[in-house]
Image 1 (cartoon, rainbow, N blue to C red):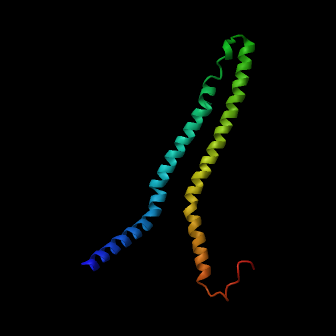
Image 2: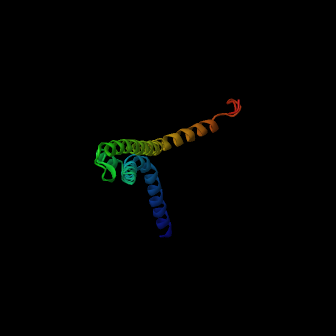
Length: 135
């Protein structure tokens, strides 16, 4: 009786382990990538909200401090133009950082597999036929 329980447990463990290992790449590039994209999109939207980029561009032609004369309008326009451009530049830099994170997410398993395969291929060859890494 204990032999069959142990064997059944071993089978379940092996099937679960193999199933998880085989399912992992599918999860990484489907569900995991979707979760990453939604979280990175929310990070970008939060940063846009924090910087107020849309607010600065929507109020580009609104005079600051109630200065409705032409000097106040010109100064307000130039000021909002420079601040809006600077904040837009910060948002674009943040977007590039977020895209780099997504690229690392996509490339990490491929790079890991390459380096594992490279080391495996080195160690299964006959050592005296293969030159060491340093030469």
